[in-house]
Length: 167
Image (cartoon, helix red, strand yellow):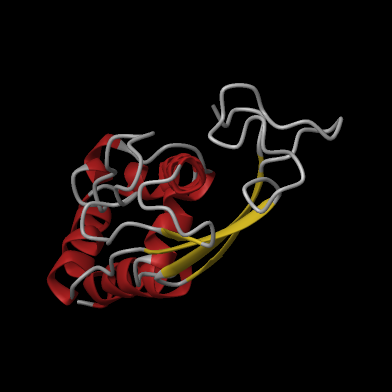
């Protein structure tokens, strides 16, 4: 399907855009793709897919901060990079099953829209899969795009610890 497609992600808080290039390096389409045998037509080339990411509510942000205040090693693991610590996994927006065409990457987000105009297209599915993989690999990025950027996260946790030490 799209494993050979080039996908370039552009993310900002709450919104993402992906440029999906369906043309293989040699000028051929990817075998087995929806665009096969349509080289040179509007069905092959570069498509733009856009989607949204759910925002954490105030209560959800506070739950993440409370968990990190109680677990300094979870904060350390989060700052070190890599997958989300187990303590936070249930607090982050849940990912939808990867590779399901037309479904949102994150549970509360609507399906992505593609410039090809087809509902549930392979371009959108590939882009959603790439977004899900990126956010799973970088939970700090996921938190930032859900409304809890690093600065707010650190202020919420370290500020609370400083207040406790002052008393």
